Length: 378
Image (cartoon, rainbow, N blue to C red; front, side):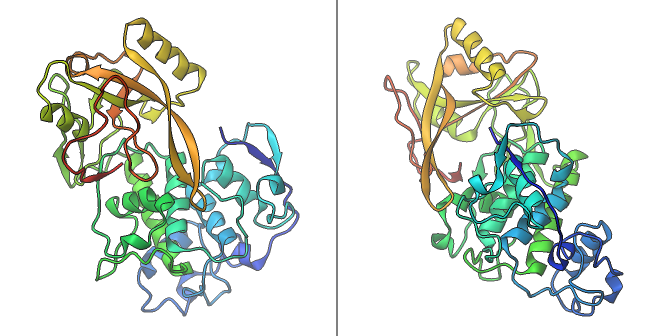
């Protein structure tokens, strides 16, 4: 659970204003340095929405490097994270981030970003520049806080310099590319460690805000849909190409293609698969360890399902390994095919994995992955 940070913003700077304050809210047509800048129309659109502004009345400084503080301010502005109430226990800002000053212009941005789930490393330096991969991670975790992100089974993108990616940011980068929020260059490089510029950051944020708006109005799937693999008795769920799965509605469920593939590879009736179980309510995932999640787990156990909490590990921050808890169930193919989701919840079944992509340890001979190489990043 994310915590609210106690902050007091006493001042603002021209730098803060250039990211969405009133001080530099010049007419966008006065920005003389945006000519021939890729995505200049998107930058101007953000300016019209008062999400970004110039560093002066006539300059946007598109090639200037973005700082950590600026990045978080952009994301808070773009996703309107400052409009979400902060209700958790107060924690001093510099307790969580020692280099962050509680009276700085960026303090509120850190507060709202952190509380809403943006994954900020404890060692962050507000004035340090930010790389493309970390900015993408900030954007995607911020997007998840405000949008109904689909349950996903993403076909791994062919990134030429993928070996340079920090594993902690890989999922965010893959999602951003699939959703059209970020692009690869002409040689299919992402350039993950390159410092991001103000122009690049603004264009990416525009794409993310546009994705959010289309998601809210159910336009995301309108142009490029396909039928995804679901269990036979369920109605198919439509999703964009590239392996995306829409969050199940209440009373519905699906198994990802990899789970169905594992069942198809093993025809023995006694075959069991061990899967991660994700609960949804009204299209949004439920915290597994919340009172509601625990109650639903107990209900499933009372029905005789072999299901309980389990742990795996993932990367956080600078390749720090941390454990996470999820609901794990062992099911036969027949149990999955006959499963019925209650009217007030949606369910998704997928294989759990550790941060390096390795399968979790199975129990009772249960299958935890496919026999053939997996073509998805999960």
